[in-house]
Length: 486
Image (cartoon, rainbow, N blue to C red; front, top):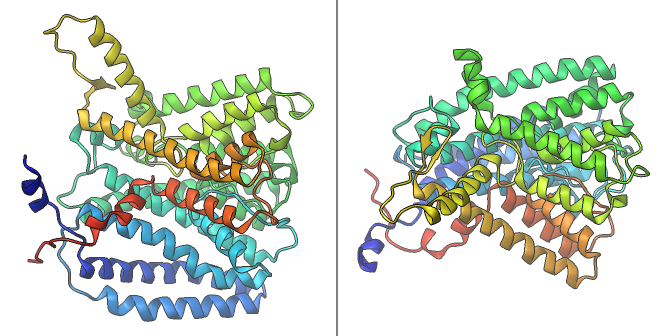
């Protein structure tokens, strides 16, 4: 195909479509903000409540007129990815002023809000135990709805890939357009996510005996976010049973949410066939064994339980911890870096490159080895889990791996220029890009503002899996021929 022909097939994003969905997004954010507004009123934080009220009013004032715009049902992928990125830009921006009611500077409030909505869990605050309960609830609530939103949006876009990959993610969801696909998927995910939250809340409340603490931690665990109401994270909980329960809930959140629906609607057979679930279980157990055998017992004072909790929190991208990560040896930090990069299942709230993509890349390596030893005319199909793979699926997985590597190396280089310890800086950058939240102490109140912004960009880019950010920055998304609305 000639380059001129390719140009005619490219359409720039339509302003009316972006405006329409930006308006709907603003309305949704306004509705979501009424929850911390109500919490602030119930907890007696009138200053925060007033600020939340103003934010709700502004969002509705902007969102309602835009949401009424008439646009075509068919939305382009570049438009959809732009809306995804706007969700993770507008959400934190709307929460900065209310969060400053807790005494935070603007940049730290933005960092905290972005870390919440991207379900990262990194914090530049010296302490959270001196913050009002309304602030702690708002952080956890942002992680909860941020996790729900990214599951719906990212997987709906993933389902636009080739048919073989769609069957691996969720074989039951179909739709004629990206909008209808997202709507069908959202209904299922919302039911599963809500049920998992209520189930987790009951378990955590039972082990902590504190309703508010259980609520905040459960919202952060199901979303694999990792914000805690305690400076010591898991060590601040009343018992090891509570910590173990919380990590168990986080592990359930790292499982693909469509899998729960398939089990509920069709029995337990999908459980045994799901490749990512097996991979998640194996990866978690391998991390547990490696940490138990290799980590310094002086740091891993809880023995095998600390190893299990840390391995699970790294693999699920949650960020809760009972260990001083800064005190670990470099080799142990490298293990955690690898685990954080891989992440959990597609269709879950975790970050990283995801286990399915890792399986695709490993399958590609296996194919290269098989084809090198096969006769010239042999036909070897790309298959995974009984499903044939498209070359485009494999190329996407490799592309994301390359983009993640480039993002991490570039950000790491900036930290090195500022004189940070290489291993600790690499750990922090990976934790941000993989939206994990484990920290070696680099993310701190005295961190240079430039580096706070760098970590924020890493959290944002990692949450939208980099591609959305690149598409928004691509000039062709905004300049060029636009499809005429029917």
